[in-house]
Amino acid sequence: MKIQKFTRQVKLLNNKRHINTNIDIEIRSPLVKKILAVVFVAVLMFIIIYPIITLEGSRVLIKTQTAVSRTVYETIDTEGFAVRKEVLIDNSYSGTVVPAVDNGSKVSIGDTVANIYASESAAVAASRLREIRNEIEYYKTIAVNAGSSPGADIEVYKNSVSASLFSLSEAVEADSLSSVYDLSRNLREAIMKKQSATGDEIDVSPKIAALQSEYDSLKATAGTGSAVTVSQAGYYVDSADGFETAADYDSISSYKAENTDMLLNAVPVTVSQRNVGKLITDFNWYLVFNTTVEKLGNKVRGSYVTVMFGNSSADDLRMEIVAVNVTEGSNVLTVVLRSNIMNEEIAALRHEAVKIRVDSVSGIAVDRMALRTVDGEKGVYVKEGNLVSFKKVNIIYSDANIVLSEPQPLDDSYLAVYDEMILEGTDLYDGKLLT
Image 1 (cartoon, rainbow, N blue to C red):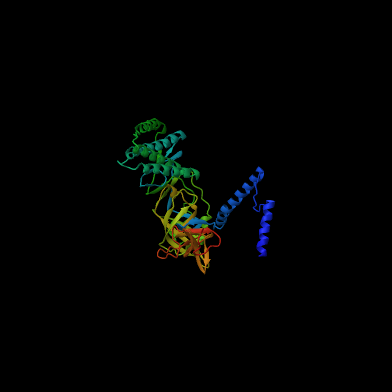
Image 2 (image 1 turned 45 degrees about the horizontal axis):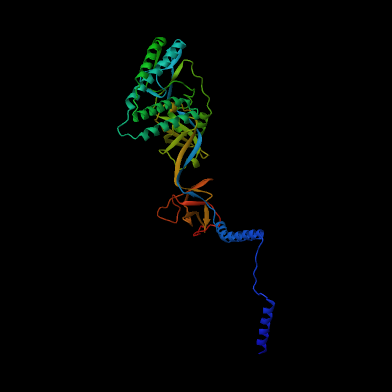
């Protein structure tokens, strides 16, 4: 009863004093309003952006590489000596020699291989006459072959021009001047065929007429030289290098390391001033070199290897192993290779830096950065969508940079072509989810 009375008294007292118990704050300062607005926006942006930043920072940064097939060749880098059955051709005339046939050309008994001219001017004219004859024959061939077949794909001719141009630029870059002439002709022929395929008319008759006119005017200047003929058949080469008798052609298959070393250290003999070249009288020629048992691997007599000539414009050549001779008391082997292919470049080979391709291994290339060992198994992590998977590799070849894995097409647990290998990444494990 007393409590109720006390409460009524307090209310009456408040009414009398006009006391307002509600709190009402009014901000009148514009500056304060701006500050509060900026603070509010900053807090709001933090609430929105912070989770995104946190999520982005949690993503795994990885570097990947697509798995592809690759073939690696096992080679022997060495020096080889070319041995041919060669006969020097000397003449009894004095004067300037002008070859009558191309280097490496096959000739028969009684053929003229060179002409001797009494004066330098006559020799120059005769040399030009030979060039003109070749040019006329070339343009006659162009006239026959320039046309394209109906419906031919123009891209084929464009690609031929590009390939010819690339080969020519490579020859110029490598200072292979002996092949520039032929490659230039190939490029010119490819361009003419392309023009013909696009509807342009190719008329080479004016060029042939001009060449014929030049030829007729030079005939009197050249006159007639003294012909040098051959008494046996073979391949003609217009110069001698002094190594024609350095090796015994008939016993080359029995050579051992010391014999090969003597060849590689031989000095050329002086060639007669009356020499007009030589004749290669046997179809087969040989390349002899020394190596070791380990480098030759499983290659035996009767096997084939590919030879690459480092300092020559000769194309890569497939040759047969006809002898593998062991030097007693060492692991040195003397290998004799044989070929019956002959052309100008091969006819000029002698003491050569060679790379002998003895074997090849094909597999899936794996950068060593990607290679890992998990539970004793060699393999790589691969990215499959947003998942990390571990795939095993079966190493069949390795070097300082890569390993080759043998494909296992029936087993998904092994690395396959086109898998996206992870080269770099942290905290990787099989089944990890990439965010």
